[in-house]
Amino acid sequence: MTKPAASLASLLPQLWHRPLPPPPLLPRALYSSSPLLTTHRRTPRHRLRVSPTTHLDAAAAARATRAADPVEALTATSYPAYDRLLPCPSKDDPPRIEHLVAREDEVAGDFISRSLNLPPMYVADLIKFGAVYYALVAPQPPPYAAPEHVRIFREVTEPSLLRRRASIKGKTVREAQKTFRVTDPSQRLEAGTYLRVHVHPKRFPRCYEIDWKSRVVATTDDFVVLNKPAATSVGGATDNIEESCVVFTSRALGLASPLMTTHQIDNCSEGCVVLSKTKEFCSVFHGLIREKQVKKVYLALTTEPVSPGIITHYMRPLNRAPRLVSEDHIERWHLCQMEILDCKKVPWPKPLITKVHKVDNCGWPKQEAAYECKINLMTGKTHQIRAQLAAIGAPIVGDSAYMTGAIAAMADPSINPYGRASLNYSSEEEKAAAVEAWVACHGKEPKSVIGLQASEISWDHEGEHHYYKAGVPWWRQDAVESDLV
Image (cartoon, rainbow, N blue to C red; front, side, top):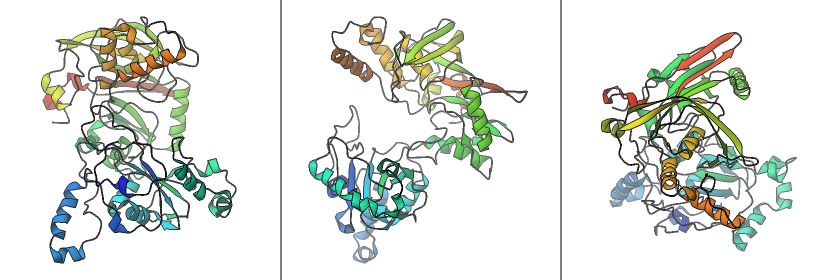
């Protein structure tokens, strides 16, 4: 893996690390994939530097300029200057995850700040964002770890050492390795505690562009229905629970207690989501979903027409994108069904609208018309509508994750090992290679908007019928109506 000479990773002792090549077409030089587990005693600050490719560049450069003055140099700290995690950058910094083990009792914020040479306020913000996790015991090193690194892991998890730790008394090692979020910079860490720090959390800049009150469809004593904007997360990401629909809607409504998620829709889609005000309603709504009492109707803007009727696929039970589907039943694969209620020809979105919403054309040939499909979602699997429509050759406009696969299958139908035109494979190894090649045909998850709206949601509860509808989908709006203008 290519790293800058000043990379922090090269200056810290490693417990385990397997170099990985950067992903194809990555425009930035620095790429990190869960890089290090590092054990620390009190490391001298002068040995540590922050990578020059982070979002602290400008502040650090300004501090360096001031420090060039002899008087300023005497008073400067070893941390780069920092003005909090706002304003939000328009692009995410390269992924960087640091793994630490405290070798003596520590305070979480101080330990992370000192170990990674990060400003204390920045560490406090990472903790507020939910980007720092801890476990009482470090996790098992991966199979590729070097013998020396395994030795260090065994040292910090030596049974006689663990038996002396009151915090894990009565717990199995597996239970003690369970991770939880650090919630306060002043949280005390016992010697041997493991930390995972997401130094560059995934950001959602559109949260700051939205008039959130105007997106509220309905509010009751139990719940809020939100017309979720695209390019936002309902409940946040693994490393960012702050920039989310639940947080920003709660603030906009001035609620004393934050809203809670009851279900999800993709970050790149827009439309109706139900946010709960109470734990009791969360439980009620989850029960209604399990009993299939919640009806969801979607609008999808596709590149090709789709005939009305029920579409059935089976989805591979692997919790990662892209979600692969097959028309044929495969044991243990999940049933996916949706009903196309209507499909009508509509104009392709105007160039100004696609520009305003940053719609990716994904290499699809320019055309005059698109097709708006009204869909009754019968089963609710992740990416189901997107994967199913792409599988029948009618991908959703702007869906960079699945449209590229659809384009590849149009050029060579046999490339899809689960399609009707798939080849006969002579061995499981050959089939596995074909599956990997098919996965590689798909693109990255969209960062902006795709032609998918959760248009309607309805349910019955305690004799009352609830029905809510989102606003006009983005592709039908004029540029002056858009909340991004």
